[in-house]
Each structure stands twice: as structure tokens, then as C-alpha cells.
Image (spheres, rainbow, N blue to C red):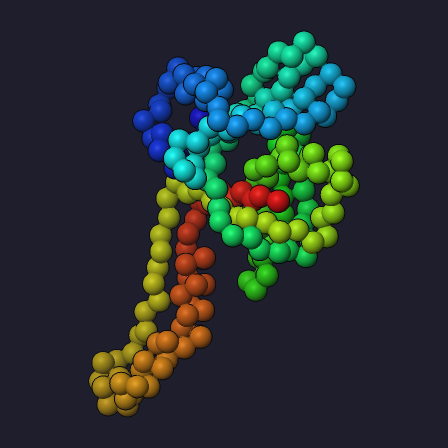
Length: 201
């Protein structure tokens, strides 16, 4: 069972039978499908079912030469918003299935992000017909989490020091400074864990 199935509202799915019913329902009542021909006798398919506006399940499978569909795996997804340009990314296919992982260095924090390529069929289509260039790419990042924490920064100053040595204006100046804001952002990024990242090309 997928680790992040509960993150999109299916926490009650506990047995293989329940999961199969959900996947069969998604497979037959999908709202969108994208396909790309990867071999002369095979097409890769992504069947997408939205259960909310921005979240749902994606069934990845393939059609054989007799046009018979076979499910391979499924992905809980969350659609992100906004785009960010990256100078260079790397994309590699997973060994066991028709899925891809991407990696890039996130500017400003010096951390390499490794994530799941959510729109693999679109990527393969671009690669096949337009010789896709990975040098400069716009990405939309999103994530799912099973749990997490947000720790807000604490200014550890003695009350007497603040009252005696700092004026009210000086305190407000520090609190609203770029340093304090950056600290809040850094703590937020550092303390959310167990995240599952996707991106759109």
C-alpha cells in the first residue's frame, strides 16, 4: 500500500481488497488519460482521477498490440501552483517500472531535491518529438506528507533586557527584519519531514 495514500484522504483503506476496489474504480472512471508510444507494440498510459480539485490518483499502465490495458502501478498526487526556473535538472528512469525520478539543486539553500516525475508521459512525448532540453526548465513542485512539524523561531532575550535596553521601535525593526523572516522560512523548510515531492515540467 502506498505510503501517502492517507495524505489524499484514503486513511480508511486498510486491506488489499479495499485497495483493489479503489484502483479499479479509478481505472474505469478516470477523468483524463495521456498516452505515448514507447515501442512499436506498446503505449504507456496515465489515467488520472481527481477526488478533490487538486488531489487524486494516477494509474500508470500500458496498452499492448491488441489494445489490452494492463495496470502497472499507482500514484497519489497533489497539484502544485506556480513555476520556478532551474538551470539544470537530471531525470532517470526507475529500473522496475515506467516511472522517473528528477533531481535539481534548489537555489538559495544549496540542497539537492530528488523527486518523482509526475507527468512522465508528457515528458516522454516532448523528448520524443522535440528533443527536450534539460538545461533550463520550469518546474512546479508539490508534496505530500504523512506527518510534520512547523517550528516557529523564538527570540530568546531576557524580558528585562528587552524592556530596558530595546525601545519598542527597535524590537519591531528586528522582528520585521530580513534576518528574522529568513529564519522563519529556514525553520519551516528544515522541520517539515517525510515529504514526497513531485514536479511538473
